[in-house]
Image (cartoon, rainbow, N blue to C red; front, side):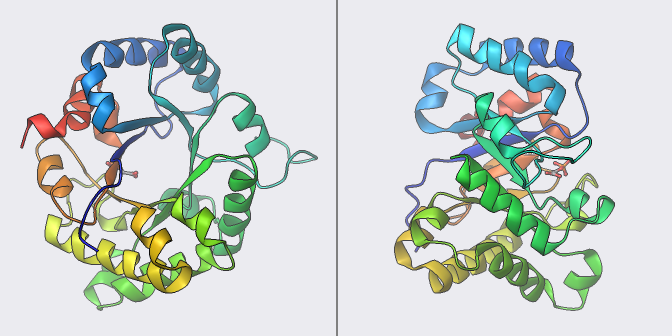
Length: 261
Ligand code: PGA
């Protein structure tokens, strides 16, 4: 399973950064730095705050940009009395293509459970968008040798009873929690090892075709200085970038990683 024919997906997770004015400036600058040739070999998603979505969508449409509009969260119900929430249906109406789900910050700070995450994935799929499903272990779990147990447990919960066709279109991001925003990165080999275990588990859960086509990202302190080595790994099909996605110059270098190798 080492032949990598999947299109790489480089995703920028802005978290709670950049207002809609900043977002417009960012996208204009990035559009200038990333070329047509780049888009022939790589997909790029911009997972922006809710308040930026409409502005970025307008820009993407007007200038026919090839960035995929992305969100970072949604509610699993279509509508109703959920003060402050935004539904998957509302996002898809705005042209959103990918939604991050199960990020460790949402699990830890906002108490999202595996069950909530499961329902969110179902809502995202129902609206024909792609979930970017995050899984990852804490430092203590890694030190006690429980990395695979944790990561594969989260994966099994997210994928239970889904059709192979659905699973094959998913994006799964392995994000060791201890590497997020800390400057610490898993070595490319460690990331490859967990990510290949994820692919094997997808094989068990959803079959060979799904395992061949599901895209697996690494996330956690990715930057232009380590992207090339990460992307060289046979099972790594992309990256989910937080801090380093906030600067258009740095993010463009990451998107164009093949020129750095
Ligand atoms: P980081 O964040 O790149 O700042 O470590 C990654 C993420 O949380 O998705």
